[in-house]
Image (cartoon, rainbow, N blue to C red):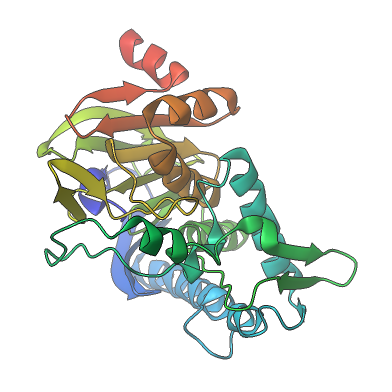
Length: 328
């Protein structure tokens, strides 16, 4: 779940500058989006935001697993049967997703879509599912069974019943594509916030950088760090609303695709990256990996930083962010 409440966006326009900041909030891809542009006037901003909406809608038609006519649905319906030729855009998105699966050792996996929904986070689950049920729930999950053929441009899911889904990467990708589209149209600055999957470029109309405040999900009224961001992305994943406590242990709604068990130990993961697609995927992967393994991974990745909050409210920073925070 993306933490809208953990991102406080400073969108104030200042007098004396020729352009202003305009924002529209709407529902796209089943989620809340905030699209912000710096433009000369209201009509111009509306035109640009409409363009962004059209681009996000195009992405949804390509990656939706619920639309029976999408290429993603065709891949799923042909699992264990035959490869499916897809547009290069979708092929390369899946290819990049598999790369993230490799570096997270499978903690992020788009084939999670085939996972049996045995965990309930609505208060109805009173005891742990049995081990065999959990084991069975992930039998059709595994990125290594996604077969890509670059020469033919095809995608094949080896196991009957396998599925891929972009719930943990799609909104970030849509934010990136909308940003790229608007930049090509000449929009000098703006921000696309896809339910907490956020990408921005340029500066606010007052010439100052965009600011993102990260809150502790156990104390959502308090911002513990402010970060200026420019031409970069930040994504926050967390379980502050969707979790279950069993035998005194808190389990997140984010399921480890390798084991079928819910992730535990963290309540919030914020990833800073060059683009929202990568930040989106890593936020999920690091949440599943946990504090030690997650920090170790992020500290090895150039241009990637993170802020983690554990289930006791303790905050952890990746090396570069920790250094910058101490210098402030």
